[in-house]
Amino acid sequence: EEKEEDVLRDLRLFLRNIVETLLVDRRFKIFSKPVDIEEVPDYMMVIKKPMDLSTLLTNIDEHKYSTIREFLADADLIWKNALEYNPDSDPLDRHIRHRACALKDRIQTFIRDGLGEDFMSLCEEIKKSR
Ligand SMILES: O=C(C1CCC1)N1C[C@@H]2C[C@H]3C[C@@H](O)[C@@H](O)[C@]2(C1)O3
Image (cartoon, rainbow, N blue to C red; front, side):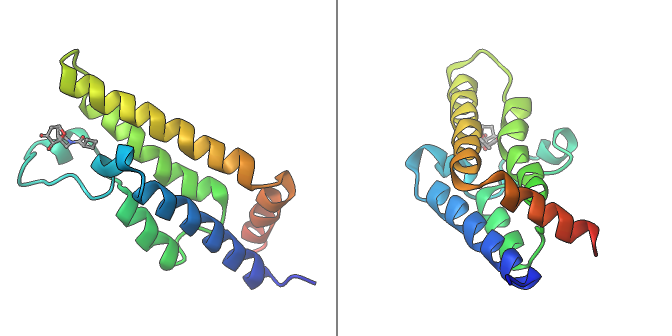
């Protein structure tokens, strides 16, 4: 039978594939690294939990996610933070929000296409048992 560690390894492989695909998508280059605090000194005052694609990948490798739900909580921060920090009607903010919405939809499609319900609930069950 599939051992719990095999399920968690499958989860990491699935999540790594998602993040690596996002990292090579030119639309999402602005999300690939942490916002530069030198360049944006007030960023940490506005955004309580910064997140980016490179950090997401490091978290996967550090076994920080044992369920899809935990991964999505961080992945969704990337586009939510972008919408929050860039709310204005000027063209640059609009461009960033457009990319944020594209990222949101792309992540959702990965999850819907990539996973059966049972794999998601299997990971949740393993987490409960620990
Ligand atoms: O929110 C972001 C990133 C875009 C998605 C994440 N930033 C905040 C700054 C405002 C805007 C213009 C530049 O000042 C640049 O530094 C940032 C980076 O874009």
